[in-house]
Length: 408
Image (cartoon, rainbow, N blue to C red; front, side, top):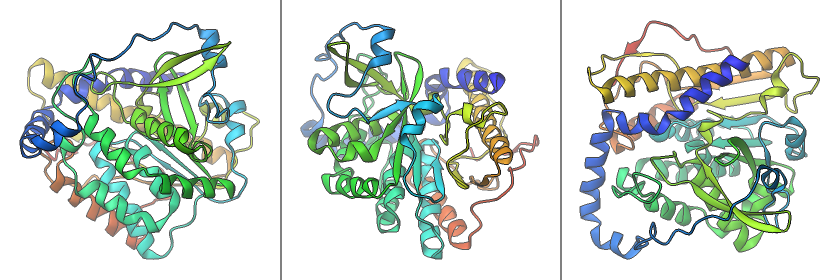
């Protein structure tokens, strides 16, 4: 387990550099700038002028304060995601399969397609628990509420481009400004959506989203159904958590979240959930051979928004090319390590594990992150697999060491 966590940690620490070094990224910037020119008037009206300059210094706090910190007014909002004792507080009051949705950027189009096709097949179950990390966090609320929100998923992944996610403008603590993504979240995550999530939480189901607390360096699991029942405060926090889970440090700003402990209030900084979990099922300690814990489910579906095997690609002999390629390999290896850890744990505890991932044969060209044509093609592949019942396999995918051709 130590080696697996070490691998994940190395990959996490390099995510931001990877995205900036990736040769695709220049194309995504060009897309963003072109799209931005078309929407100039809209941007001027919506962008928070001078937002970076208005940021205030945070009040100082200690590790002891952090350990005791709670969200004011919502004491059951969250737990540490590496503590099986704390995680027990989030267990559902109903039985049923669980769904864990991974990160993956624009490849989240695959997960959206699988869920839609699964609905069309008539066999998609109601999940007792849905968890989401990064792009999976943005999918999770709609997946949690079921097939009536499939059109929202379709719209989210086939009608947006790079300029709908970020602006090519640096801020005090990031190279790009995520205000367009923040605005999309505000538009899609409404009071009505939260009322429906709160109602399902009241029935005993659970919606969980992972962020990384950058102050403590630990995974945080947020109890989104409990948060959804707290009116305007809950709505703001819900949106902030989704934004934080998708905010790659260095690329996007971390999201400040106010908490209180030991008689004082302060702001934590939260960032991308994939820094501490490529996807999330339960704390890893619950999966170990030494754990006496009984896993709280009999069936788990893991929806991986990426390919799992290596892809052949000759990197350019320069710093961005070699570094970008190296980090991409590390990220894929970290995802495979987490998946194997969960697989072994499920086998040990007699849990039925089903895994979906992007077919290694998928080779539609991509001009960069959030390329509309690429996402539509990947969404269609997901729909077809979900409709045929072929998306989820009941064995660990073969991680062939023979790389598939690159789609670039």
